Length: 402
Length: 156
Image (cartoon, rainbow over all chains, first blue to last red; front, top):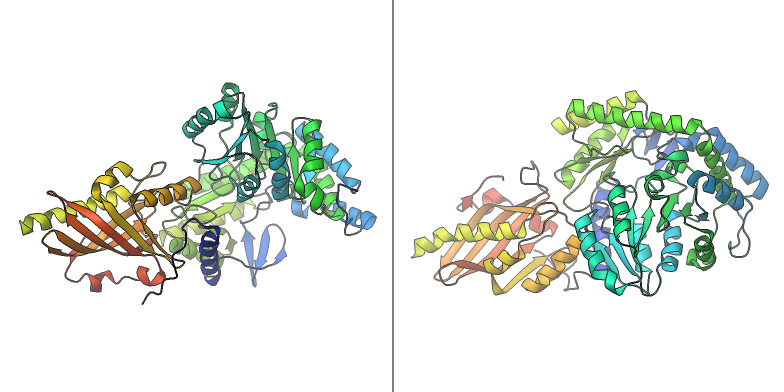
């Protein structure tokens, strides 16, 4: 006997939250989400008693166990303590100035460091988007961007289909006559399926539509790609004044916080002084500022380009192994791989089989991906040796054949 | 006349599944849906959170919003078994379905039963009501037992 609850709006926020709660709770009950890690070496991670080879993290350049970073954190801890508990609008730790100067060297642009990439979006977008503007956001843009565009109160926000240039053109043609600027909000590298924003097509769009502005979250492109790790967005569009790029100081950068690479000092100061989280949120703790400064030095060192080339060769190796084993993968040349599954049951079965074989990967279902596109997401980082990659692909091939 | 109507029922149900299904980058065939369903048709679903009831316009609004948000990027649903009763211009069908990520998928995203009422309208069947249950109970369908005397289509 089915007992149905009363009718409520399909689109209400409460209803959406109920659906997400149910789905993640079910996955948690099956033991595939909300787990707890123990000892972490980079190459391996202990999860609830099992030491697994780590194919689930985003530390693409493997910097999180580098002595330069841990020493940088320890030195800052000794110098400044665990925190400087005051808003940056009053007073900031001196490491911020060092960090922003080095990030400017890395990116070739003025940079504002933010408490996190998410809080960076929340600081920047409501400041950048002015009355009379409009916002377009890619449907697959990171959840933090959707949250930040929801905080934009002075302009209409419209969703556009993922990387569909034809739909973008239609939306621009519709909005351009009525709006001063149209902000297009996208990811530089999409975190689930590992596809890049269509940078060249976006550049051509900027040429054709003078009102167009781009806000790009390149959190997953930071560090492992581009000169000094400035990421794909700045590599392709860094010379365009119409473009603002958000970087992550976590993930590949292996420290904490976010960074906004903006076209000029005026924009930086405007966000610094008016962006809500820049005034009301706490700063990055000094130890992690120390780690971030040390990470910029790693990125600015000539050897970083060789390390990036080595990561690319491991990515290529994973693609070759998968091709040889007949494992279908996303074909983009990025550290993010996705193995499509036909159902969430199949996804969970495969994730559990890989766990038993000694690998940690991320089963990915709605709301992280569309309901009809469940799968296994795994990453290839500098922590993974070639033998690890071979073993993972062999295990994937086994569980797909069974 | 009865045999003719019964024979045409399968085509009407096939059309119903075709219009609600769509491939990557596309969307349901809204124009054809207005032809397959009656103008006063209702679509009702039970989910663990609530019961939703739509007319064609509000169903389109709901589905379009899910498409815009990327909740679905494709949808493939097909009938696997059917039990039908026809009485004059009235047909009531229990239609077991499977929803898949792609037509050739070996496992399905979900399965359940659509309760479909159709009306014989000027020489063809049109859908008056489509009613289904997305709760775990509604997905536990013993197709073999429920449809022992019905039409079986095998796993598609």
